[in-house]
Each structure stands twice: as structure tokens, then as C-alpha cells.
Image (cartoon, rainbow, N blue to C red):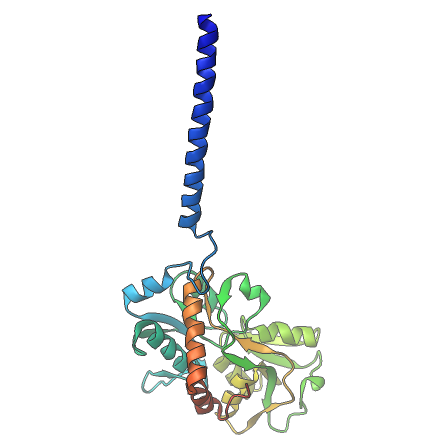
Length: 285
């Protein structure tokens, strides 16, 4: 009889324990979901603390190009870096930190910008960077902040007047890591491409006769042509190159701050002012 009672008592205790553990498990799960941010956030809510880190540091670290006239070019005399990308970067610094001078510019190239971003050397990349599906696997992008298209830069009088004149025998110059290299190889299979560390080296090679044409986004090429009247941009753009500002994956609070800045610039008309200042004409959209 005692054995039966003991068995019944044991069963009751086991069932009670299961309810207690189940209740604790549900509470812990809810707590873990909240801590991990798996609950659906409010619209515009951030799920990273990168902005807090920037504010604590007191300055924004931005990767920009030093060799790209109109967008990011370093003056060897003054040491200042100026261009469209620089003005946009300063506007972002003002939005986040309240001071457009609370910024440190670090040189990047098409090849180094993603590694420098992902190893924490910079907070964002503002460097004529085309948004692509492949790059989205490595970084997160802001909204489009500049619309460009790939074209060709040649010496005046060149028989190359557009993409239709490029053949496998044509020597094309470009910058390592740029989407323009991949694009030209797809447009003209078998074409010879010489890659350089940056655009200024590629332009110097073109002027030295090491190639027939230099290819990248038309906005960058117009900057090069402005340096030397002996060269010109030819043909119609043959790709769509939407520029985005890149941040580390998951830093949605930084993306939100950038997009808010761009919206503010466009609403106030300042974006159009910056665009006209560097590109020489108002944006079409």
C-alpha cells in the first residue's frame, strides 16, 4: 500500500516539476528574444550600437578616395581632400555628431575599401562605390546617393568613339577591384585589361600610351578629362552604376543615419547645391 502511495506521490511531483520548468523555459525564451532583438522592431528602429560607438569616440571615420577628381582628391600642396564624396561625408558627420568637422578621412581604393571597413578601420565607405548584389553579401548599403554610368576615356582623335569600337585587340586600363573591369570583360569577351592600384595611375598609363582607353564611371572620367584637354569621354554610358555608402553588415543604425542625412540634404536643396558645385550641373532626379 505504501509503495502505491509513494508511486502516486512521485508522479504528482514529476508533473509539477514539468510545469515549473516549462514556465521558466518560456520566460527565458522571451527574454532571449528581446535581448537578441528578434522581436519585430518599430519602424526605423536600430538593431546595432554602432552610432553609440561613434558618438563616444567623438568623430566619424570615413574611407574616401584621394585620387578621384570631383569626388575625392587630395591637394598635395595643402594636404586637404576635397570633392563630392567629402561634402556628403561632412554632412553625415554633422547629422550624427553635430559638427561637420568631427570627421577623420582615411584613404581607400577600390581594392582596399571593403577590407578596411570590415576590419574596423573606418565606419563607412563614401568612395564612388557601386551597389551590387555581390557586394551586398559583404556590406550593407545606404540608399543611392549618386547615379553614374560606365564609359570610356580616350586621347582626342582616337578611333575609339564608343563601346562599339572596342575589340579583343584593344588595351583597356582600369582600377583593381572596380566593377568596371568585370563589366568591360563581359561586354567585350577576350579584351585585354591592364589593372592599376588607383585611377591616377591608370590615367598616367593612358597618357604614356600603355593602353587605348581607360574605363570607369563617366563621372570619374569627366574629372580626369578636366585635368588634360587632350583627352575626352566618348560614347554613351553602357552600364547603370548607382553609388551607395557602405557600412558593416548589421549596422542598421548607421544606414538609417545616412539615409536620414540624404533625405534632409535633398529636402533642403543642399544636395543639389553640392552636386552642381562638383559635377557642374543640377541632378536630373
